[in-house]
Length: 512
Picture (cartoon, rainbow, N blue to C red):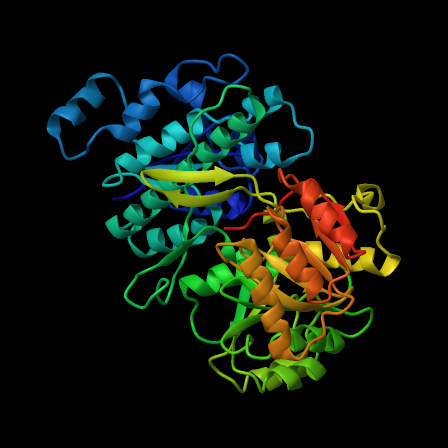
């Protein structure tokens, strides 16, 4: 379909100068509005104001300018139906063959801190999505552009085809339009849901990021949608599977709990060992690895500092599925590249911006949506939350803070024995909390680690004294837990009998 008339109305002028010059050189008549018309005119390129084209002025501070039969009739009438062509001629409706629109910057507006709802509403585009959808619906005849990155390709194709575009191109561009308008509408509905008292529906539309190798099992297909590439970059290794993506997200959330150099080892999203050190990542690794020397096999290793060659030499000897770091030093990466199947994942700054995103999970007939559990709650003024006769020592308080940040990332029922800078025993996912304690104690014994003087953390309350007593009998001298059981008095009494210190955070951190 040869392009003879174009309508251009954009808020983002990126690349527009070269594009309109190319259209003008091929004899395309250009219609435009407001600031876009002025931009084009300043390039000494002829442009017709939409108001002059329709014979109807812009109204209501520009709220109504392209919502007119001569615009939408020019986009929507079918060129292959004689009755449509005749109606267009009878009503002086001229065909519009190309629409170039990018939408008011709603997402950028609501991303600003403290934005007022009235300001956000003024950035809800009406005419832009209407024109895009009209053009995309009639993609057999109309070329529609919503992404400036497509400008150059369209000009090249027109030059090669006497001013025409192919149906394949128009179909591809139409799909991009519906993806973009869907994302735009979702952003509006999310903002209004969050900023108004009246709740509405939840909708989500995301572009395909990549096809995955498989789902949880090889017989299940899986795909990844959204902006994963803004959060992580795969530097080498086999393609990602569904479980790899889940593991990467869980590992990254855990490691961002710590400011000091830290290393964590995870298996099936559960921490198997976590260590921190004031200076060396290698020492943090040793503390994490000592917790469970079997866990790294086929697991995930994550650190919060650039991975250096010293650490790379150690972990390259272990069969590991994924290694995640904010950066990989050149020597370290060269060493790890020898293991071609090993996935090296760089954690980008964009991941931090997702920590306030809601958690979305499939549910029968729909979705579950909740706020993200993105902060270890209850650690402020911890000295004032002691419920036992003996207060914790300074070292025990430091260990409590460490343990609490780890246990919130362990599947419930979750138990962690730790020192102030390392995990010692972890029990996850048991049906009874006392069984999680026993599992953690057994894992520590298997690793040859002494629990004497450790701190025990429980992600939710000890419902009975038995779990705490088992932990204290194993060597723990202090405990941190939410409290809230009807038997709290019994649990506190058991702690006092063992001369143990205990803190109630008054916040639980279930993770199912």
